[in-house]
Amino acid sequence: MQEFAASVNEFLSFHKFKVLKNKDSVSRQQAIEKSEQEYDIFNKTQKIESDFDKQVKQLQQKL
Image 1 (cartoon, helix red, strand yellow):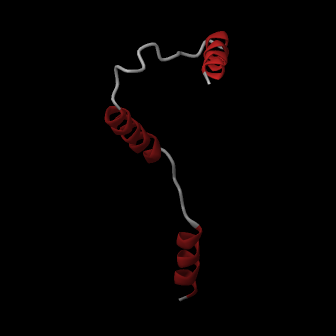
Image 2 (cartoon, rainbow, N blue to C red):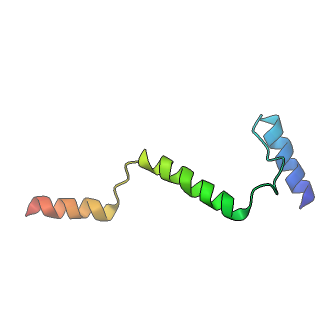
Image 3 (cartoon, rainbow, N blue to C red):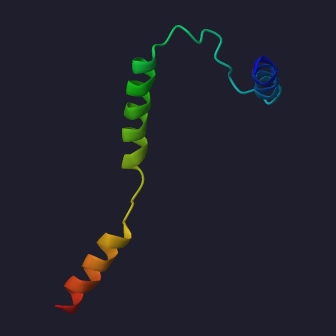
C-alpha cells in the first residue's frame, strides 16, 4: 500500500498538483464540512432538472 501511495504522490507532483503535506492537520469532520460547503457553492451553478421534474412539467402542460 505504501508503494501505491508513493506512486500516486509522484504522479501528482509530476503533474504539478498540490499534494497534502500535513494530512493529519485536518480532522475528518472538518473535511466533511468543507466539502459540503464547497458542494453547496458548486451546486448553485448547476441547473439540474430530474426526469421526474420533466415528466411533471409535461403533464402540467397537457392540463
